[in-house]
Length: 113
Length: 109
Image (cartoon, rainbow over all chains, first blue to last red; front, top):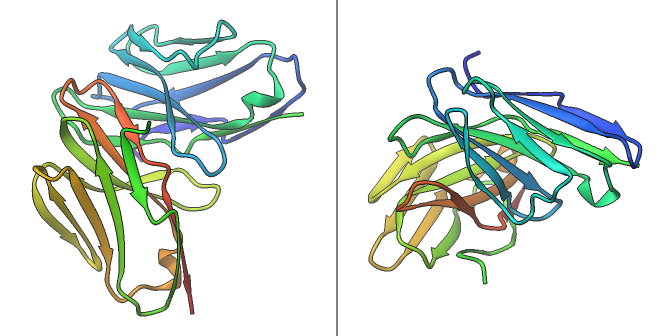
């Protein structure tokens, strides 16, 4: 399977704990996006990487959130000191250079209890 | 104000019915996507459009750039079509998707 993969698919954590999610985009894609989706809503943009550079961050991404893409391939999204409001589906998408077609991962569903 | 508006928000249809979901947007775009999301599942891209019309099986997507409007049609709907359908646009800058809130479709046998 050469699609976008995300790990884990599901994560349950206690409030206050840190969590980290991983996204492996399609190998030749240089643009990678993170989105958050809560129940009944469309995905909301969190952050965007072109290669290893984080070019844009949403105001939704508080200081507790950090994302990296150290080698321009896979990316990680870390949430520190999780809160119940962080419970959501976290989606990753990748685009190829100059292309507008996007491929989405299956998402990581986070539940903070 | 959401840059992408979809209607209806919820739709229930009998198996076999012709279904239309509408999307209007307010920004200049380079492409529009129709996406499908099954409950608890990830998102699958159905179509990417920059003009005209595309057809894939029972699904048809159209876009009118001048009117900033797109429609997704499902012919001969089937219960397995039950899902959330999301319209998303890529701005001219190409840096972001703007998503609609989705249309939840239920097809009853």
